[in-house]
Image (cartoon, rainbow, N blue to C red; front, side):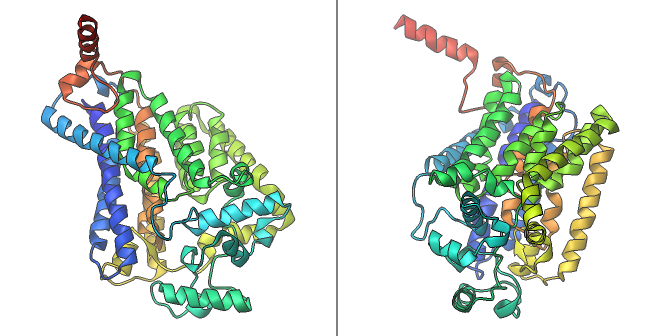
Length: 462
C-alpha cells in the first residue's frame, strides 16, 4: 500500500523535524549543551525520507496489495499521536507561553508589522522605517533582531551574546549611527502589504499565519482522493513541525499558502498568479521558481512556460513597483539584505556543526559554494526526473539551504507540507475502507465504513 507509506513518511519526517527544532532551540540558548550533531542528522534524514516519499509518479499506489501490516499499524499509531500534539499546539494559540512571550517573535514579524503601519500612514517603509522607534512601540529589544558583523559587533567570531547585543543596541539607540542591526524591511512588498488589514484592526498577525497553515492543509486534503483524505489529514497534522513552529512564530506561511496553491494546480494558468504572489512575499519562494517552470514546460511546452514566467514577473512587479519608483536604492538594499549584509553564521543545517557542534567553522565562501553546487545538482536531478518523478522539485527546492551560511531551522520545518502537496497531486487512485483496514492503517479522522454501519445498527437496536 505505497500510497499510505508515502503519507506516513510525511508524518514521520515532520515529527523528526519537530524534535530536531526543539533540540535546536535548546542548543542555541545553552551552547554548552550537546545536540548539534543530532539536529543536523535529524534534519538531513527527514529531507531524505521526504525525497523518497515523493519519488515516482505514484500512479495506482492506492491499489497496490497491503504489506507490512504491523509496520503500517505502528507508524500510523505514531502519526495519530503526533497529530494530537499538533492539535494541542494549535489550541494553545491564544495563550502566553513564557514569561517574556511576545507576538513579535522575531524581526521578520516585528519589522513587517511596523512596515504595514507606515504604509497605512502614507510612508514608504523601505525608506522611513526606524527600528528603534518600531521596537520601542512593540516593547521588544535586541534579542529579536538580526545582528550584523559590523561596528561594535565586528570582532565577534561566531554570534554575539545577549550582553553584546544589548550594549550595541543601547549605544545606537542613544547615539544613532546604527550599523549593527538589520533595520529595514528585508522582504518584497507583499510581506507587509498582505497583513495591513490585520494590523489596521489591531489583530495579532500570528493568527493570520496559523490560518494560512490551516488553509494550506485544507488545499492539500481537498486535492487528495476522497478515500485517502483522512490519512492525508493525519499525516500533515502528524508532521508536528508544521503546527508547532507556525504557532511559535513564523511569517513564512504568508508565502507558503499561494505557493502550495500554485503547485497543487499548476496545470491551470492562474497558478502563475499564485506563484507571483508567493515570490512577491518572500525570497524563499524564488527557490521554487526553476522547479515550477520545469514542471510546466514538461507538460505544456516552452511557450507556456515563458508565458507563466511573464505572468509571475508581472505580479511581482505590480506589488513592488510603487516602492521601486519611490526609492529604488532603499528597495533594492532591503530586498537584497539576506545576500549583501554581513550576517553571522546561524542555522540548523551543516553550519550548526561549526557554530555549536565542535567542528571547524569554514569560510562563508565555502558554504556558498556548497549551496550553489547543491542547487545546481537539484535542478539537474529535477530536470532528468521530470517525467519519472514530476513532483520531486517541490521538495528539492529548499535542500541547498541545508549547506548555507544562514540555514535557519525555519527554512526546513515546512518541507513536510511541500511533500504533502506533491503526494496530493499524484494519481494514486482511491482507497476503500476495506483496503485501509486490511493494510492496518489508522487515522483519527475516520473509521472503516463497515464499522460505522455496525455502530449505527447497534444504536438503532438499542
